[in-house]
Length: 298
Length: 328
Image 1: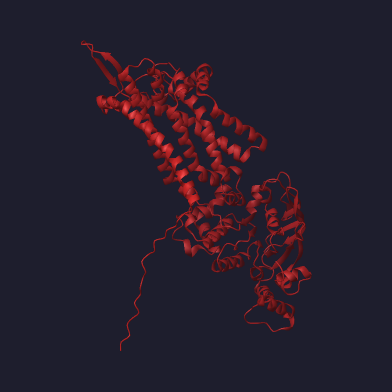
Image 2: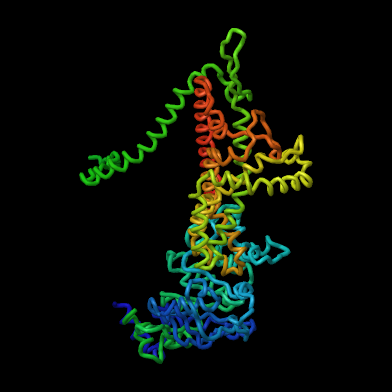
């Protein structure tokens, strides 16, 4: 309660206040990140673009007319209360939505300008380019740690010349290498939850996706593991486009360049507002966004 | 004045007990009684067979399972001379059952995969009903079908197999007689055990955790790739378990095998040749004209079959727990 009041004050007066050395409010955190972010990272294609996306579960209209640009090399956080359609939305971005029976969607999702829902497109190739990390760590328990990392290559029948190098590279980028380098042959089930999640990130990286979707990747993890994964996200954002769904607004402020706020008023979920993360947390345009980020509901 | 170091006292572990309510105790007694009744009936049958077959075990000794002569004759003095050796029948039982498994397991696993991951809802419902119906079909009908319909066709297949794979010992034949062979009996048995293996496999496949399936798809897996990486490792234990249930049925099957197999007391591993054995079928064949000593031998044979089935099941259990835990 206390904290949320302080957040409002800091948020609204941020522009005329001297910067704290220790960022305490969401807007400060976001502003700090905006400063450190190297502007205009390398070109990575044109990124991912959602145009007028709707989604249904059977007859239930879960998501209404969402258009969002994820430009290459940026981190976008999707925030909003439960049931607002943000997980549904992220699952339409790599065609995971259609695995649930009796679902449908409308609109377009463009990867480098090409519609991923185009008839006749090879959906496995799409998912190779748009990787995903799930809420619950889901390594393959029948495989070793090393096999898990390289499983995507095997599944997609890709050939790699030097598997050892790729293995080390992916595990290093996922921040797990030092912890597991001596037991790559051990089964993945023996790792802690946080390690398993980083293993899943390493696994997603091995097939070299352009975009990485993360659906609440830290919600099942302890704060220490969460921190490690946030560091990993910062590292990765230099070389790929990341979309992350999170319930943790501190996390959104710490890791993202852009934030989109989703809300359902009982009907289908809608995207209320999107903007640079420090603006969403300091001077949101919509009153509902402000209420949410300041903790008045949700 | 000296200060004593604080003494660390570790209390003894408490004994934790609970007193269940009367209603709970009554229910507990009921479920216990019923579950033990199955065990009791099984033990009584085993004891019955042991008592009835005791004279045979005493007279034949270990030879009962290592010899393969089965005869009741009379010597000059008119005294009965018996030779009861079960080896050929035991070997035959195992050979036929493995032929049946070799055919039924791949078929059942593929059927189960189709039903779980590929079949549209309506076709799935119809197929499941048909496969379940196969299990309820009387075995004598399988026997008749095997004799009148399958045998002429299978004879031709056997000739083909012999022509191309005859250089492998088990596909060779001493004489070109291909009817009433372990191969044909195995095919009939396989049709009978497909339902049980299919339905157990289908059950475990459908329980594959969704998050693992999604993980595979999110990595760009094809459906077949996903099945290989996720579903098969997860379901392997269940498939083995289902196969063992099928094997149990194959071991004990009587009438269907009896109608399509030429029962001969000679061990034969050449599955295409018209010579085989099967404990249960042998019992039904000898039953009608058996004298008291032979009845005892047949009872003893039943007990041996019973023990063999139990052993296979324990072995299977052991294999399952040893090998497939990691897939879960």
